[in-house]
Picture (cartoon, rainbow, N blue to C red):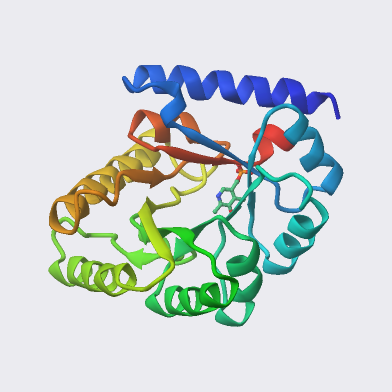
Length: 239
Ligand SMILES: *Cc1c(COP(=O)(O)O)cnc(C)c1O
């Protein structure tokens, strides 16, 4: 268990160093400890060492953990995986941030369910910039040249932006896993996503799309160097 303390300190140190390299204050980067599959004990230990943002990707697991840890008032639950509409209830009820709006339908469902709980939810629009078929998100694999991809994304954002109870934060993406792609390839995906985010911001609204959720254990430093404001780190913390 005590290993967590060292892992967390080490990850935080690396986040700070990467923020410095990107010319931004470290406190503008949010570290999410991805606690999916981890025990309540593990989450409590991470909490003890100062972690407040946790990431889950199963609706039922989120509900169970949020319920068991409801005595920790400042804990924040991030839902980071794709979500089926019939499992949206617990995310609306317990979630603070949803990182994976990959279609209008899930945003509509969450918006409606949030009404019931009198809650708001911060959301990220997930984009698939790498073009890998296994990845969810709006297809932005050739957004620089493909007008249809840009139109679909913008039209969807337009609809999602009008839904009550949802606050769009920005874009979220996943790079190819580091085992199968070179650092240059990964960097390029993050850079293209940052460019897309900048473009959406100029077209859509200056106040939104200030945030960018990208980077995992294998690539969070590259992501920060390329403009991530939020990294989702699991195994580097809970190993
Ligand atoms: C599991 C997961 C992470 C964390 O992955 P690690 O490699 O363990 O850091 C981040 N983002 C998403 C969307 C995930 O599903």
